[in-house]
Image 1 (cartoon, rainbow, N blue to C red):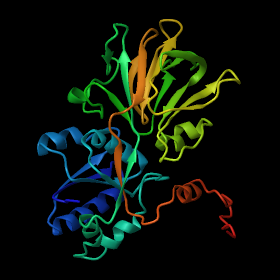
Image 2 (cartoon, one colour; image 1 turned 30 degrees about the vertical axis):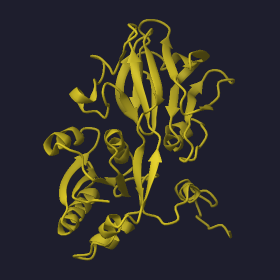
Image 3 (cartoon, one colour; image 1 turned 180 degrees about the vertical axis):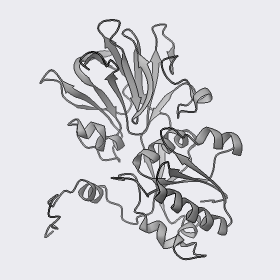
Image 4 (cartoon, one colour; image 1 turned 90 degrees about the vertical axis):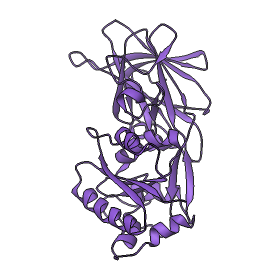
Length: 326
């Protein structure tokens, strides 16, 4: 891998991530890399500015933060096919990140470039992770990224959409946007042109395998190995016992229609960030995105199951933390 240009993105609001960003930037510059450092968060989106300033994408994006910071980077970098290397600095669960100790082995010793030399020598793996895209049909048959209710295309809003398409690394989900009445909605699901079900309840999640351990899992959905290209459709607290999560092929085309009175608007969220608002009669079309996110893997023997066991405290007690004899 070439390391001529590196973007160093750290989690907004985390002093630990900011301090680590300074150390890592110094280490990279000592190796001859051109480095741009920026923070990322709900109120800070550095990617449009960096792209405008640089004129071309970097060779690598290094993310210091938690999964939320990674999701923002993936939405912007996947269409550009830029690899992302992530470290859990100031984050929480960190399903998508490496342990920060791997970073310390480089930055704690002045002049050490062991990690970066390893990347230059291609001693790593690239994992391709499925992304989703969503377009909005406002009733004229022309899908649109949004209107005055929400964000527009990437060119004008820089929100991680590309060419009028909303992108998500974890999931899209639909929730009612009414505060003055009971927060339920009625959504009709169409898969490949066939109406499958109507969900009345708190909403609907459409997730990638990566996102299956996020909101979808909290709503009772299945966990999918990231090596499987598939899409999870999971209702949120449905008012019917027959409404269950389903897993569909990656090339499926899903249409979601809000139903009911004209004031029953539904908000579309992408990776936990607001995307746009749908009126009854609007349709959201969700399918696999053209590009996959490229995640740099440093572990020589990575194990998704080991990650689940560690992050979800399987094979042991949450209180005692006793190790399994196996």
